[in-house]
Image (cartoon, rainbow, N blue to C red; front, side, top):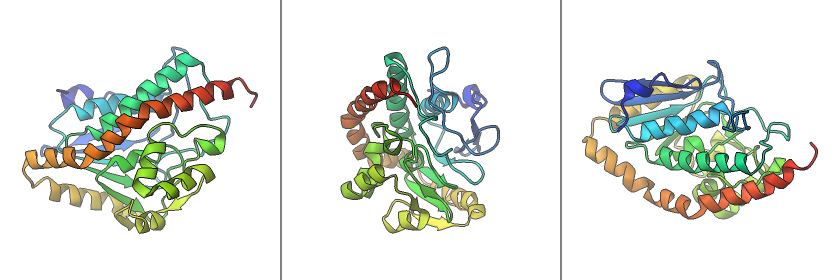
Length: 263
């Protein structure tokens, strides 16, 4: 079991704050501003800092039973960016993609293994890895937020990680395939209409509403909180166990070929 004191200040891109009652706020950021996704290989062979730290933090949070309710949010007016281009995409060899798929597989499962209800706050556009706030049980969105899978098919990358499994499951297979293949942007209002977002509001009301819900949830029996989370996430975990490794393999196989081509 993880000890909060050992990991609360361990990350450059993730701020962790927890109340005595067990409400944990996880704030993704880059230098105090909007979170910048980076999965590119570093000289030591590890993935980019935000990818590596999300994987490490998810593992610690998931193994700490004192995290009774979790609020997951981005920073400022953007959840995750920047919009992807060919120059922002990972270009690496087999060793690099082996590391990326290892981190990706564990990150998704660890996020779903968080032992209490999760409230996701889509505080602005999510151009990259928009699936992250949607591992939550309750999803709130700023009224100007939207999601887009800019990082994959529109830039010659297979959506083989969790995003390519989760969104067709949540929004329906045909709508999900269209979303990935066209690079579609879905606004907060559209996401609410199709059932992915529960509430839409001005950005300044997002975290207060998340905390209001968290305080409401935490009044329940801690075992009820934990076991309800386990029950509600079980079907999604089963789906990911079945498809995640295969999807990462397809993404890596195509990416190795793409890495050999000029930008």
